[in-house]
Figure 1 (cartoon, chains in turn orange, red):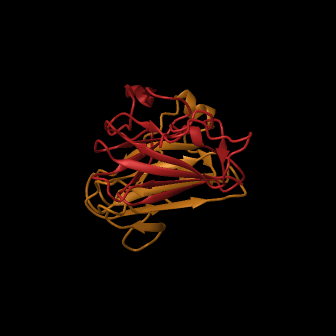
Figure 2 (tube, chains in turn orange, green; figure 1 turned 60 degrees about the vertical axis):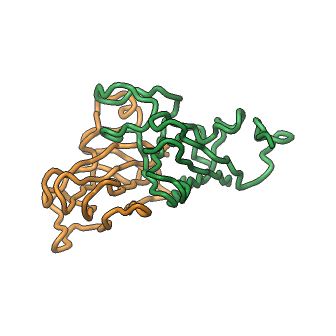
Figure 3 (cartoon, rainbow over the protein chains, first blue to last red; figure 1 turned 90 degrees about the vertical axis):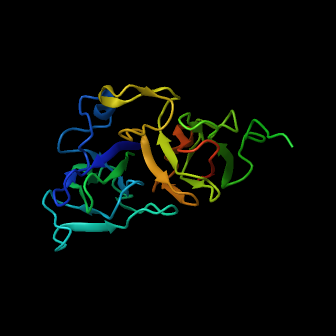
Length: 122
Length: 135
């Protein structure tokens, strides 16, 4: 199933936010999916810039990834338009729990922009 | 011509890919199930599900994934909703701009429960069409 992890807002550009920021680990649904702090196994993850963002968004693989130097940067997503809402994703088709969603952070250029994040659980 | 209400013909879907047809969000905030045109395919699993927001839409379309019908209880005491959670987006899988398509991947054999997908919209009357592909 695809499971939404909600909108992840970045209050301060340059300070990445983990994609699990909204996840309530006491939620029985999340627990049934095996989600726990620091570990949310999935087969795929989709990070889509929020459609009302004012500027670009970035996805990285560490809490201190740097959108400027590129250290830890996985993807840069353009500012959304009326006809395109960019996204970045990853998947491991042959390993249903091979990705850990906790390993991904997002950053933005404009304060309070964000991403909508969802994961594929097989 | 009136739409048929059942998808199966002689125990099988007549085509693969199978078009689920049009889903019109009459009232923004009230989600429409992608399978709403048929009464007998909610339990079907597909390998891929292709959802397109029509180019003539006025605003965005929200794709929702929920295993049961609305109203949905949002996590963290967020209340209930019968459409997209447009506060924290906790039931939104992806947002489609007008004309955009999302090919929902399962990557493996038929793992997409097509009866779990709904669409909502920011504007009354906006539409999406969907097609299911079976492995």
